[in-house]
Image (cartoon, rainbow over all chains, first blue to last red; front, top):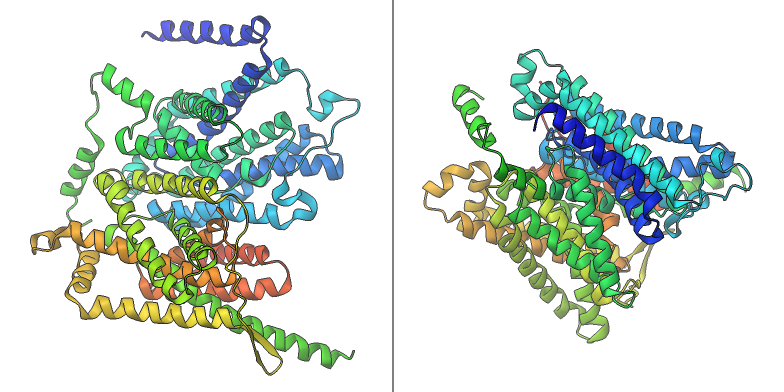
Length: 339
Length: 295
């Protein structure tokens, strides 16, 4: 597709998405669409660093901070989410820097990085549970209903408004994705993900580049958490934070495909529709069955379709331009026998 | 109450917390050993490790509480069951992914975490259950120690010594250690890598099973119980150095002390938070792990 053709396709698609709630008003379907958009944004945020081999299982922590800090500031201090959301994002960003800096500075990569971030989201969950006097612990938390100024409280009863907000946030995520995709940072980060030492030798500031993308990713994930909280008006530690949410992000991004901008969105559509279908299919009498089937499908996915559905489809449609990665790495190893 | 009396009581509690920390460290060291063994040999991390322990705890609960089997007969059966579960996990999930990117192996075990948690929810419900065995409390001077913790500590030590002897005194154990040093060359030396991987996974599972037998004496079991000690096990392994058995052993006791002393001042959850803060600080001081030599 030519550049102009692609732009036109995006334009038509967007116009259709904006027009949708004015034509089609089924509240349940609109609700599912809002959820898909918000989670798509979260998954896109995760894949910003995930696509460069920085697999974080700590994003459940960032999302939880976004949701809980915003809600706590509103309930206890009466601070409007318009200020609360930026504050929560700064909090998540600060945590990302505190954990990210030693990890990147001292070359904690691969398994180590995954386990450290995994522990991070576990700990955020523990903190939310431990501060149950304020956060309601595992029973969940509800932001106070605003009596008068709905706009100031960022609380809307109309699903159409929420749909448009979620659409805007999602679009913002896609735009940032493309912005990173076209920046110099992308090349630096791709070099780092292939071989850190070689990238450093070529003049890439490895720690700084990794920190920048981690910060960006954490800020966006916190925003996703805050928006989710404002929309649902009820959060529990398990739905917005913790290891399960982190894993959910990674799975959806992988199912959809990491290396295309719409991959995480595609993953959100598939996983949420699957989860909803299973939930309704099994009904209320079979609690847990939906998650069981969901988990089995995810494991099968990773074993049989590691590139994701969209990624595998695109691979089949497009002729291979690049040399496969494993081969590249082999070539690097042969070139540097000392390493 | 005078200041001196206050200090006396405080010291007793402090000593009690220190000793309880050592006792907790035994079980954590057992968990870290299992995870380290699998990482060292197969180069994969089982994110669902704590969930294997959860399944083992349920097995103990059903055998002892529901079917009335003696604890000491149920325990070896549980170890065997979880060992088989570990081998099955390797055979069904890890083995097909051995040549895949490491991250896929990791995520597949993450998927197994989902599966095990929801399986437990479906099969056993979300109620908290316990063995109903209340072991006596051991009084020592003014200090009280739970008999269960003491027993767990000793059993964990015995388990670790058994693994040590197996690794150093048997041919299979030697082969396992050799593979952890050089994965490629051992296949050329006539060692059946697939068999060794399966045995290692079974041992790793067995250690989780043993930990389950011990933890079920102290804690209630529910489908999400793995989440309360899984993260801390991962931190221990990273701090000790993944695959480094001695480092994991020491780190387990350091963390157990922090959790125990942190819990002295407030809730147990804050002990975990303190442990994580300590972990971040240690990453700055000793980024390569607890036992790494500094250059």
